[in-house]
Amino acid sequence: MFEADDFIPSKYTNSIDKGNFSWSAPSNIALVKYWGKKENQIPANPSVSFTLNNCKTITALAFTKKQNDGNFSFDLLFEGKPKEDFKPKIQKFLERVEVYLPFLKDYHFTIDTQNTFPHSSGIASSASGMAALAINFMSLEKALNPEMTEDYFISKASFLARLGSGSACRSVKGQVVVWGNQASIKGSTDLYGVEYPYEIHPVFKNFQDTILLVDKGEKQVSSTVGHDLMHNHPFAERRFAQAHENLDKLIPVFKNGDLDEFIKIVESEALTLHAMMMTSQPYFILMKPNTLQIINAIWKFRNDTKIPVCFTLDAGANVHVLYPNSVKEKVLQFIQAELVGYCQNGQYLCDEIGNGALLG
Image 1: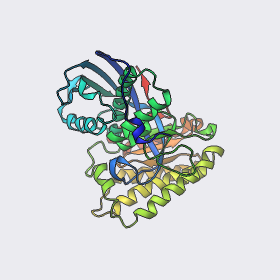
Image 2 (image 1 turned 120 degrees about the vertical axis):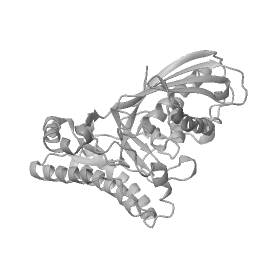
Image 3 (image 1 turned 90 degrees about the horizontal axis):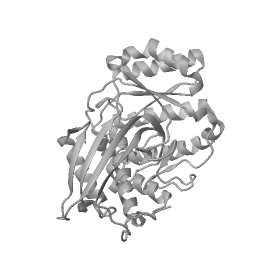
Image 4 (image 1 turned 135 degrees about the vertical axis):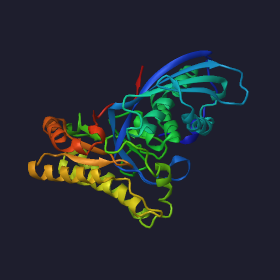
């Protein structure tokens, strides 16, 4: 396990004048939710997520050596066109990670990024975007320090991604990723995401996530503001304890494939996340009427058919429909027959568990 100081390099053994890398990094969907954080993007409670496969950000990083004039220098392109309104977030990220990547002011960077899912579709792109950028910077550092181990490379990429967007640290590697210190999970840490280290039942392999796009508009309350509202929340401490408890409960579930228990934990976590929003001060609701219609329809379908399908939610109105690959055909028929009408413009995205960031 690494500490933050382990990610501050002493000196580089190599030099490189220019080059480029390209990485894709996926979004992820938390099963146990993180809501509330301490300083420096440290989570108030641990979380565990499925890494997705199709919803991802592809980022190309080109770099050219320049005179170190004490400034960061970068151009930012989104889908090949300049995107000025993204630049302040990247600037802030570079300032946060400079101590860990001391070469940043030695180069001019061109960051060219695109998503495989519709922009502003209500899918969190900060997780995939920051993960893709962080791992590109790590490729440059590995070129400067070729002796770097794979474990260090992945752990530091996740650590850096976290400083850009907390949940981004869960988008670097692994099908199931734990972020946050959990006594029962070996190697878990608040500093970066780790691959879930224990046995996972075959039923969770190729697990499906169909994302129903209920509302593609911008959220009226950002996740950053929402996290901050946990500081004086009347139920915060109990919620943080509950997350630890639910993560412990998932360990035997992942091993034995008990889908009834999985559904109970995952749906409870989703509703608890939104309960925290509804009981903060100021309070707010990110679910929409159609979100509730979908949830009720899923409950009825599951009750009538005994097919193990469930929902989870992010900090927004969209619904992630989770189910094993073995019932894919039946669930997709149900979605097309009964749920598509609740989606904005009938839009939904089919995804499944993936393996994390990929080079090229």
